[in-house]
Length: 451
Image (cartoon, rainbow, N blue to C red):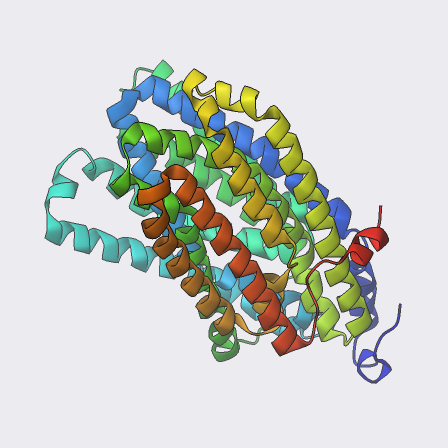
């Protein structure tokens, strides 16, 4: 492995050994993450079916609405420190700055909990002023959700910390497998003991499951990390990078639902259902990018810190090529299985096949441009990344409003495909301009991709 010798001398032997490990295993880690996310999707689907069947449409609707807001606010309440862990911890460890590592771990966890608690408290104050929501059937679920929020945010931070150490299973399994399984088990137990099948009971079960899963994950991390010793806190540096990352996450969450939200205003509910079913299947393609990012983003940071530009460029090429190949393979497989998968929702849902085809085509087109977003968030350029994501959210919304009236749900799918492709292109251009790294995939990259 070639490295810049003028910088490598400053890296302690333990950190150097750690750095050498960074150059191995990203494909295996990505496969681990992808497998867990697929299993988690099955768990999540089973949990939603269970809740819907136990509670009925009205109570399930309340639970679903509350859970969506827990997810959006919980991810945002970390202030970007979850992804910031993947950016700062590998670099500080590679350069032997153990005091900064300990400071980020302890300070980041504390700020995450306090920040999420503040968001929950502010939300309750706003809703109290509004009055009607807390007094109606949403009242008890919302109060319980406020208690969940700090735990959810802490688990999101723990996921980022585990990813920064390349512990893919520890990062992904507790929030996506264990928590879902505990929610189902707790709900079945509660109903078995005579609890009413109401939304507040489901949210209470979610509170219990989140508390157990977060405690186990945090305990496991504490046991594996070295927290004893002096700590250094670089809040200005950390937050200058992490706050734009938080904005990117928030805008990204909006990007994932903007088409469904706008369709709700423009087409009948049954038509929205046809579109939504296609998006639930298309999400399996999106898991490819999630898995690749979870396996490689923190490695970008460590290689950059060590001055290994050759290794960094090689990892970018490998990630881009394998992501595109996996996206093509998963997308083709889903299209072949689409009649069966859509038919599980009901016979009418087979009409969603063209929608699914367009959405998958957009995912494939976006994957052509490689890991530009990861490079911007991990190596610098997070402000540009946030601006691009917000701009693409606006583009997606505008295209949906323009294309849905004349073309229906296919118009929404086309809008999202165009916006996703434009987002990938813009991230690639920004990564090249800021870091000089070429991220788009070429046929040569595909031929040279490791098997």
